[in-house]
Figure 1 (cartoon, rainbow, N blue to C red):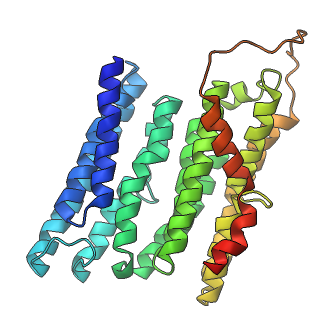
Figure 2 (cartoon, rainbow, N blue to C red):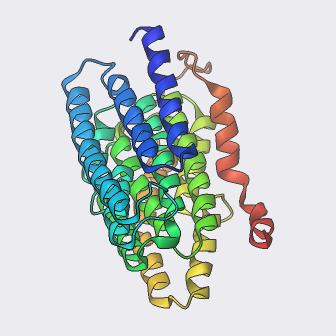
Figure 3 (cartoon, one colour):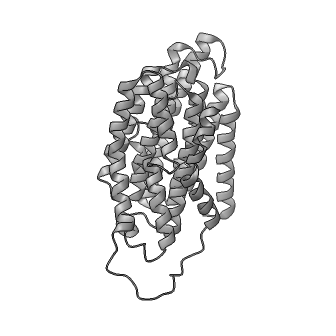
Length: 344
């Protein structure tokens, strides 16, 4: 793709997301989401491949459906209340608005587009899709969280955690595994949205950090399949060790960063006397833990017989190492901040 065109599309992505995040007007927020969607489509199709075109088409149709439902709900809300203010939606329209935004996020059972779209795009585009594109809808959900239906968030959250773990078990494609991982993590975040929006925002920030670190590691290693990552140890042992630890952090194992949001969310559910929800959440998250541990085993505890005899490292193309290093450190070492966060 022409660098100038790519720069225009990336600036449009930034403008669209910023417009949505800063707006208090439903129509302006909707326009920002549309700019975001339309700016990402050419980036998804920068590699002229049938899979990329298919992924872009699925993404466009899904986002257009969600946008239509959102605009319809906003119009009915404006008719009912006489205003376009985001912070005060009509009770009748809160549920369809929430469903439209959750569809944009890719929460189960509105998740079917996400694994297919991620699988059809390059890793760099998958990184944007899994992190940056989820920020504006999540900010909108946080703004309407006082009025959102508690039963809806619990059902969507538990379903997303279950589907995120169940769907990732049989996958061999790393991008699909990251898609189901994203669904599962967003399920944890949505589960607590009504009860503690600040904790939801904090968990979302940690999700962004861990997912960015994982995608940057995959970009550095140039791997998209389990069969490729299983023979990458001899190429870059240090990078593979870091990747293994990031996977364990995504799984939520102590003493890594990923344990922090899960601990705080379970504590919040218990504090709200939602013992059954907390138990179901922990049980369903074991499915996700299984496929993370399986991937960790393949990454580091199996060594391919086709190792090379040279003592020099393989020369690979220069890739952005500093962002990967910073996000990897943050994805692994933020757990000691938990007491400070609880006090806040």
